[in-house]
Image 1 (cartoon, rainbow, N blue to C red):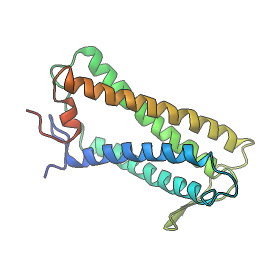
Image 2 (image 1 turned 90 degrees about the vertical axis):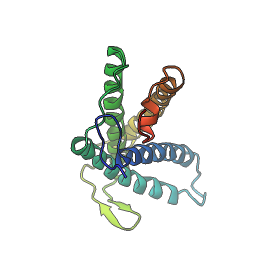
Image 3 (image 1 turned 30 degrees about the vertical axis):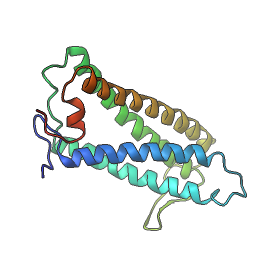
Image 4 (image 1 turned 45 degrees about the vertical axis):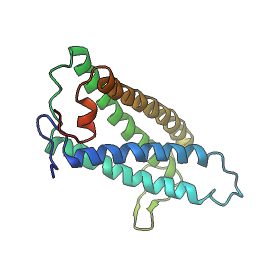
Length: 184
């Protein structure tokens, strides 16, 4: 089994981290949209946010591991068929996705800890509140969190469309590499 990336193929750990983060982000987005529709007397009114916070902290840990792994095991080289615009836009989109994801996670932390209470992560451990009492911290962070979440979902959908374009129109190995297959 190929765990580390090679010069022309993503290793299994990179592929697993990529898809784990992607599925978690979409799940968290759906959970977040559903949570805000709940009324005070709904059964999940208090439980859903606790799950959302716990998964958010676990996602933050996964993202930190993912960034460290990119340095330990750099991604494959761009395909020779990529033109300059494709190479530059690929790098920029990946950087933007990382910045957006970390910004969403930080804004979620600021929402969750605005009242000074720590975040309990599935009752396994707690993450302390460090920045509190900043006026309308929860409201401001909440607005940022919402807009960034929509932005990352839209950008990631464009990322997926680009991968499909590479596969079906350009007929190159981009999507196969992202899925962990050895390029031909």
